Length: 94
Picture (cartoon, rainbow, N blue to C red):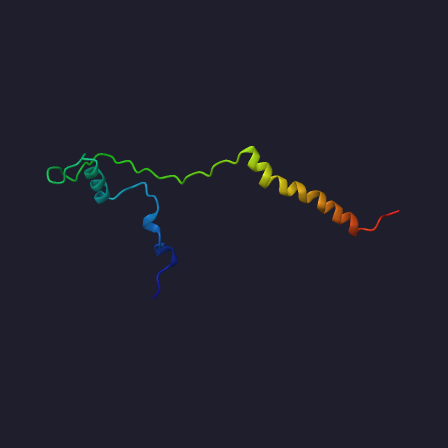
């Protein structure tokens, strides 16, 4: 018998950002920040731990000079050429 597709775990499921941490993850983070001592403290009533999602870096915006050279110049130059090509193909109406 096969497993239902909704029950299968994705290959990167554990690599995604999660808002809720397991108790072991919370203890590990608190131990790193020296807010919890595993030898003395109880694992019950642990303090809250923030889970911050790391945002991907944003692309730098193009300056006016770069936009005129690459992005806007090509369509503007192609438009008159397209009009000339249509005029050459179509016969003149009288």
